[in-house]
Image (cartoon, rainbow, N blue to C red; front, side, top):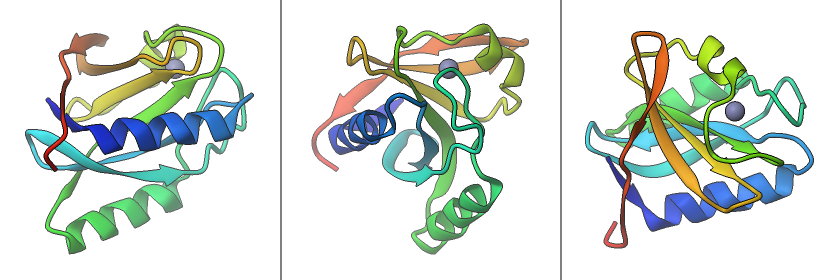
Length: 131
Ligand SMILES: [Zn+2]
């Protein structure tokens, strides 16, 4: 999956702003790449959990449609742990078409995952600057 460098920068900034809580949002792009982000409210306001506000999710769908793009996934941050899915992340992941992106505020790393047979499996991310 291709990811614009600006996307990673925007997510990292959002994650920093949300400390001590997790941040979350939607990923906008095409079937092969992520071009922009749509920040969302974390309804849980928690350092270990997130729940994308459905109103923000709806707004992201609308905005991406207008741009000829789609919502391809969701991102959230881990303020105090690594960029690997928590048990809760795996239990709450529902969408097999989604790319789940996790950024760690601690390590600065971002990793991508897809839901395969109930488990979140790592997907290689290729960062690109020309977008
Ligand atoms: Zn998580």
